[in-house]
Image 1 (tube, rainbow, N blue to C red):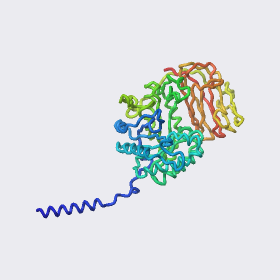
Image 2 (cartoon, rainbow, N blue to C red):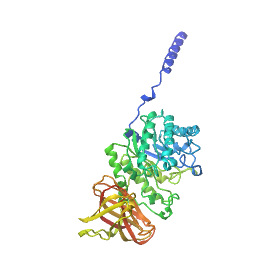
Image 3 (cartoon, rainbow, N blue to C red):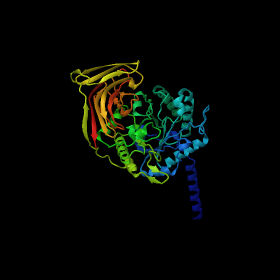
Image 4 (cartoon, rainbow, N blue to C red):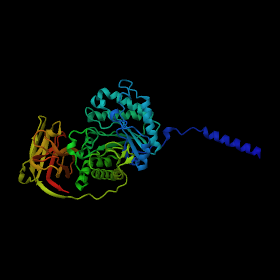
Length: 501
């Protein structure tokens, strides 16, 4: 019996040794999911904002336990904004080495997120030097991505990279197309199959899509930021000039407020279908000085609507001015959490409207509208027929306001909410960005309400809703039509209504 036991022990030891000596499956043979699959798995996310992208004076310390809190709430990914360019984190001259200690810190955050079964997006945030001096900072930018990609090359596909947050300033749309392509090539040397998120120039919003050249890469996800209407989402935000005047702006969740969101995303929805490219909304949020019920309504509608389109999303943010968690009190903003995670889509609120103005272009009359070419670089003309106005742009100028179609003499009152409704098309373009506004009719041309719209070949209706912060009996309606190529814009059925809540 003893000999038999020794024999069995010897066989067991031999088999154990053989198994333990088997080589691990090579990393390159791991299964990498498609960008579409990864985007579905991203699902609901949140930004760890004001932490690693912040400066020391306003930085919120990172708590690893937050990742468990986030996962327990039902979020499935986090976006980690990171300011890599700080002097205490990376060299500003060649070889642009990122400090080992900081790399280790970020690596520990990634490791903890993965332990909590969260996908995680690493980005490059607030690279201010690159925005001011693209040519001078390009080598540093690419070197930093080479180092980041090299460190994480063996990580699973639940880690994603985002090349750059909100390109702007001197990093023009044309330059950005070149830089993102080169950065992607650097990443692909060590991470050939990892999903990479690519955003738009001109601050990362929907308006920058018209200039973006999406790389020919099957593992790319398009990312967009959304904070419209800005006077609602940023009311009282100290870093936005004039924002205190917007305090009290509400979002009622009317059908026309919803329609404005759908109009903003119209081109993105079409692009996602036509190009088979996944879409991630990397930031959206309303600042805490807005009333909580409006914040809940806005957040709930956007979260559910994004999901209906098949978009993944990441709310801005976890624990600061836009946040859902108070780390000092250890409390959640429960209404916002529910709006993000579990609330169903409600029916829209239907107010009453009182009509104040309707355009009348019958018999070729202008109805008090006129066309203004405000710069020597701009040329346009208008024609009126069939109760429509056609503005033909022959020289677009450099800025939107270089060509304007204007109706003065519009009276508005402080504290009242208005809806500007109109129909528009651009027979020569599938993507024409323009701005509509109601403004003061003299310097400083204060905008009481404004928004950008994307006009295409099909005739569509558009809405601008706003609450006026002051009275003006001689305001104006203005369409800014410059800086968008030599195109025609057809406008009709322009109405201004007072909204009765």
